[in-house]
Image (cartoon, rainbow, N blue to C red; front, side, top):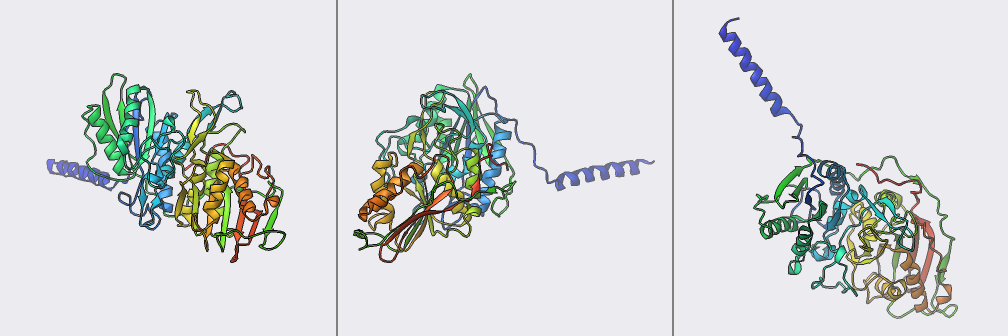
Amino acid sequence: MNKTNVVWLLFLALALTLLAACGSSQAPPPPAPLSTDNLNLIFVVSPDLAYQAPGDINPRTANLTNQGLQRSLLMATFLNQQVLGGKNVTGIYALEPMTHLQTANDYPDMVGLETIQQFAMLNQITLSSDQEGGTPLANHSYPINDSYAEVPLPIGVVPPQQYCANCQGLDFRDQDGDNEALLTTIVKNNPPGFYVFSAPWENVSALMANINKLEHYNLALPASYISPNFIYAISITPSGSASLVTYDSHITPPATYPVLSPPLASAACTAQTPFSITVTGGQNGAVIPAGINTNETLYIIRHADAHPQLYWDDNNYVGAGQWRALDLPNALLGKVSPTQVYSIDPGQFGAGSLSSSGDHNWSTVAPALTAEPYAIANNLPYKLVTSFEVSDPQAAAQPTSDFFFFIDGGKFSNQTVLVAWAFQFIQPTIAELLKSYNAGNQAPPSDEWPDTDYDTIWTVRLDAHGNLTVNNAMCEGINTTLLVTPPQF
């Protein structure tokens, strides 16, 4: 073989190699998972109207689309496996929705929470499961810190009677530097582990820049937004040196609503004793109260499965609850047709079970996250109740009734509303509503909602004259009794 042929063959081989490389669709492997010996600040970029991948955010509701929800589910697996290496998270912090209102209708930003919820389900927390704070029990769930710092609150948000230092979330406004104070406290305490923050690019970029400056890390940070597929981690060694690790998941999510596999079993509506109450003005002493709404239908659901034992509670739901929440659009199809969705402000918090660190107050995220997939799948506006505390069932009964059923409240005449609530607050609210009709003797019994019932739907209707009907004839029809681990994506 002459030299010309040899050179030609070598050139051809090189060209084929280069063509193969250029034509390859395989993404480069991600960096190694973060070290458990380091303090790792991990930033997940939740999309908003300003910074998103095309098609991830509904421009009308400022909420996720089906595509955006799919991305969050797939990103959870990537974050858990590729970034944390399958290890358990140490803390999760999400955007406080009421600090970031979007569109002319001021819709709260629920996306930071939903972006990180599936990831929370892939972790476990051990909490007490008895009344005495003992009998530790691990479960597939993790609390998401989403409550307000002790700074001026957003307009319309009631100040809590006390603040929860261990529940603090991320403030879009960064009021009085509360976000930096949160991160600085974590860094100063220097506990190794994985601290995950879910917020829009505006917050993520500012947090990374400010902590980089405050701690003199001299890191080369990203100059601009790239994609919601990017996860940034500032990894700090025990000696205090820091490095920036960037992960790209290369996820291309489908535009359809997630399909659960296997499909969930159905359940009969037998969890509660059936009741139906009708109150008509002028009959049996009933009086239609002044200022009552008209032509309103309220469908009230309980938050998804949250208590594997009666006294186990992190104010999030558990793995079985994620199945229920994601299946809700399918389960309610043909049963209800709401025009909007409401729930409790996840910035509120309440007492739950005791952790090994001594914490027992947790942000109340379960109700709002239960109805979030339904709102996404049906392109519905999502709003939060913020004007009063939902902490004591009896104290909250009157303001809840006023808000949902009277014209000075949430303006629900001629509306059909899906409400996700905590079950112990539902019966007292309906009892208070019935009292306003002089019909308190017809209230459902206080034990009408069993502790293990996550399925029943209470329907409240006000007709054109304000006459009232309440019943529990419907249910979601979702059977989660055998489910422990969350769905996988």
